Image (cartoon, rainbow, N blue to C red; front, side, top):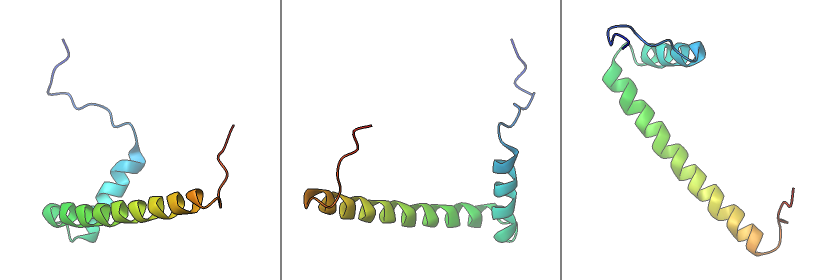
Length: 69
């Protein structure tokens, strides 16, 4: 059985670098970093919703053809 004290290898060093950069941008305050990421995520979710509506309306009006592969 593997020891739980061993850290698991990180699958993506780019992700670690991005996390370090985000924390640094918030002055090292991890709580502020999490808040900023939540705000950014909410904004992006809203944008995706608006884009989905726009595409849906355009598709319904025949401006987009379905992709058949």
